[in-house]
Length: 334
Ligand SMILES: [Zn+2]
Image (cartoon, rainbow, N blue to C red; front, top):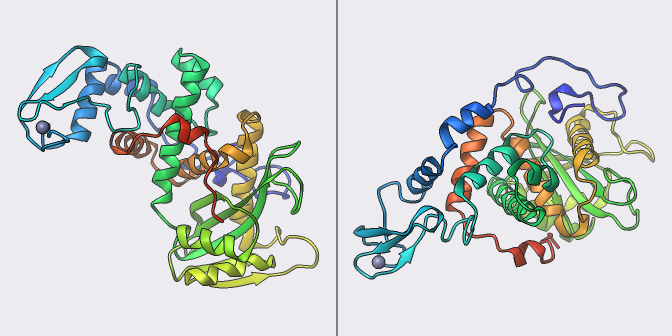
């Protein structure tokens, strides 16, 4: 079963179809192509410098351009001639304080952004040749970066909305009210032809009007046309300036209806991803990272090369993600 929704029939509709389509067969970035561009430390340093200082070095303290380069390799420092402040290529970025070569980070970004089902930390450890702890930290820093990047772009237009749970004995989509599960909201923006464009997957404090209103304000542009089933809390999207219509079909969720095809397909893909490689993660603590990274990859699925360059650029320019932030309680909308 493929991660990409166009290759799947919706959940509860029997065997997945296997059409050859442009998403499944798009070339992406090959490993030789990646190594040609980012295979050496010098290439990665040049890429970082270009992203951080596109118009040449600027001292982060006094904005002076004149500087010396001192040290070697990963310890290379840029010292401002005016104020003597020292900085490095990675200071103040997602790679802040790293002792790893930049090429290890770039390889991790390649692996994490191009893998269709989302790599596990264990798989990343094997591919990078680092300790598990190092791979785990890189993985979570990059997932947090992807989630942060994706959160900057709210959905607009027609949106299918559904509720689900992560966790429990069998991770994936569970029933409402199940104990020990993390409530999540899944939303899919569709185009005029009814095809899925972008998704949002977010842990929420619970299925209450306040939680949904808070989620909608952060994830939907005002004016969205939101469709959901009859779960009362979804009317909370009205507080975010969205229109809301709901469909009720007896006791069951209306999964058979075309209005919910894509949101259910996305949830089925999420379930496949979790069952495939991420069984061990702590849902309550890390759901926001995994879901945000899933959404980021999904939303960039039409152009894997751009996805790679976007993640490199974001990792090189976004603020550091600290281990204590990662290990702290995950942020949820409440
Ligand atoms: Zn300076």
